[in-house]
Image 1 (tube, rainbow, N blue to C red):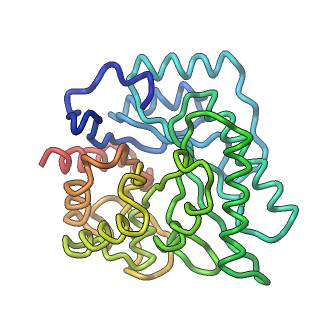
Image 2 (image 1 turned 90 degrees about the horizontal axis):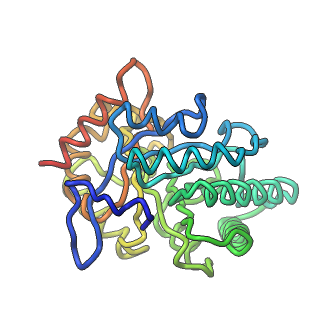
Length: 302
C-alpha cells in the first residue's frame, strides 16, 4: 500500500481490513516525460499506469533529474493514480549463462529498480529470461534467482518485483506456473516477489482462459502452485493467435481468441483479489485504449 491511498475511490471495498478492487490502466508513453505519462493516463480515464524507464529495446537510460522525479510524484498524488507499474526493457536475460549478458542484465535490473524506488513505484515487471543453448531449465532458473536476490539485496525498499508469465517457445522460462514457483522458491526476500499474469501469454502457453471452466481451473492451478495472494497485476491482452501457439501476439479486447466472455469472467473472478489490470493492447486505431478500457470497466461493474 502506498501513501497515495488516503483518498479512496468509491469503487473500493474493505475485506478483512484490506482494500480490494482492481484498478485499470494502460501502458503510457514517456515521449512527454515522466509526468507527461501520468497526464496521458488521466486523459484516457486510467486509475493505474504502467511505464518503461527507457526505450524497451535499448540498454542505456537517461538518468531522471531530481525535478522530474519530484514532478512525477506530485502529479501522481494530484491525479490519484495507483498503482504505478514499471516494466523492464526486453533486452535483459537473467537466465543466460553468457557472463557478459548476465552481468549487463543484472545491472540494468538494479538500475531500473533504483529509479522505480525514487519514483515511488509500487511494482516492476520483468520477463524471467531464457536459458542458454548449452544449458537447461534448472540452471536458467538458478541464474534468475541469483540475479534477483542480488538486486533485491542491493536495492532496498518497498518495490515489489513481478515475474511475468510468458507464452513460451524456444528456451524461454516462466510459461508455466511450475517454473514461476521454482523461481519464487529461491528468492530470499519473499515479501518483495510476486506475479504479473499476462492473459495473451497464458493463452499462448496453453492455459485456456476463454471460458469459465478453463478460467476456474487456471485460477485454481495458480493458487495451488504459487498462491493467489502473489497475483498483483494482470496484463489484459486478447490473443491474435490460437491456444497453445507458444506465441506472443496481442489483440484488442474481444477481438481475439480469448474473447469478451473470457475477460468478463476473469475480471468477475479476480476483481477483489488483484490490485491492477493494465492494457498492452494495440494503440491503433486512435481511441483504442479508451475503447478497451471501457470494456474492462463495464466487466468490473457487472
